[in-house]
Structure formats: structure tokens, C-alpha cells
Amino acid sequence: MDVYVCDICGYRYDPEVGDPDNGIAPGTRFEDIPEDWVCPICGVAKDQFSKE
Image (tube, rainbow, N blue to C red; front, side):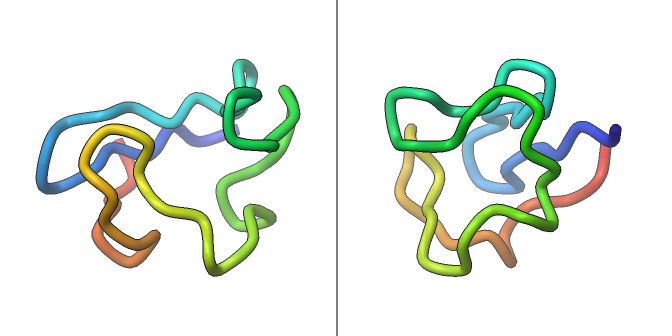
């Protein structure tokens, strides 16, 4: 699975880890994250992330 990086702050979304603090379970592909999810560090939307 692909890792995505926030273009603004550099936060790495690793699907093997997920974002459990914000309701995203480990194993969740970036494409499957709800559209209203935001970067847990700087708060930007998913469209501000790029594939690593």
C-alpha cells in the first residue's frame, strides 16, 4: 500500500499504521479514508497529500 505525505507539513500517512487517534484503523488505504478526514498535524484536506 502506498504512503501519502502532506504537502504542507510533511505528515506521513502510512496505511499499515492508519490514524487510530482519528478513527482510521490500521490497514486502511489512503483512498478509503473518508473525504472529510484532515491531516492530524496541520488540518488540511486529503487533496493536499501526495503519494510518496
